[in-house]
Length: 428
Image 1 (cartoon, rainbow, N blue to C red):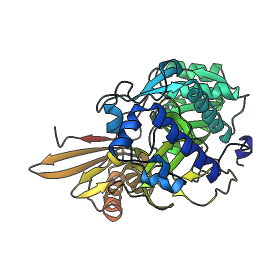
Image 2: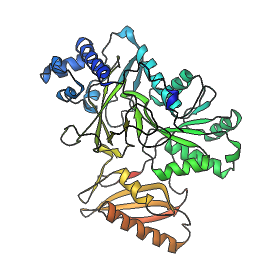
Image 3: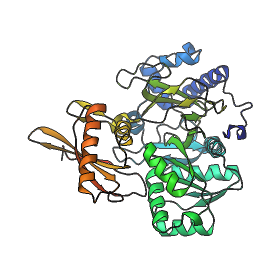
Image 4: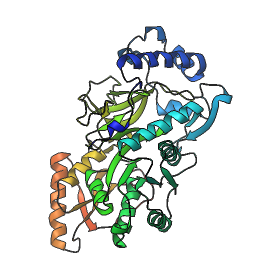
């Protein structure tokens, strides 16, 4: 049963006309208060008076992560200092961090979107939500907590790691929902299974995000924890987690179109793509104040699903993410994305969701080494058969040959945050 009836959609401004008004208001605001967009639009000769429909947004330039990094520390701020109540930041592992200022209204809008996600997942003020993502400059932990408080549920703000304490609190406080990365949810599920605690926990729902996770991984988490899981989406530059969630039908993620405008573009040419076509997700923050973004390139690969969801929720949907444009592996002239690898392992029985790819280069020749967990890995003949099937599936579905090593369940590294699945030694 869908829980969309729990979301009050009255006066949310989800019509085309309302979103057009919000887009025009956004453009007026950035031209008045955002030095970043004032300079960007001046440099590119943009006249916001020519933007009269949602389709006209394609006349505006795209915004990139590199531009946001160049604006460090507070070049994205679009309101006076006294309006800013908080900042969050990306990790900055591949360059300068991106700092995003938030107004009081931004914080409240974000909490409301997170609350909608919880309601869409069937949670109420009677639930106890154990929050395992990190706090601090990262958006995840505090976003999950603010949404729980807005819902009226009990927030259990554990933060990451300390699995012993996590399990103790889960048992003693009778947590009914888990907010987590998929990697840590799997780690917790395996620990609960090892300790035979499944019948002693009270979890019923998992709100899982921050990284792509395969259907096999989802099935394992649901089976070992005895829960329903919901795929949550977000990124630091666009509030944080909670801008989209799949409903109980798990057929795409509903996004909050009264606050956000989604487009999909060709990641190479930047041209807009029709609904239903796979490409790079681009987001415009219609109501954000502190650091509004216009046509921001997320690097996430998905498609807009044009048909209304059968669950009855009026908010539009995107497909589950295939991967990221910067997660692409290029080997032997072939582009490989995480979603394609997950399709491969999904087709072979007895193969786990957990894998690791090691890329090597020897005498100018690239090789792809694929390590994967399988059931009954102590049976050498079983390993041989599985490896042969996986290599054939890689050749048939992706067009590359791989060297396969089958290992026992639980043999690959587990993470309390995000799993590192690709190790590229070619440039080392």
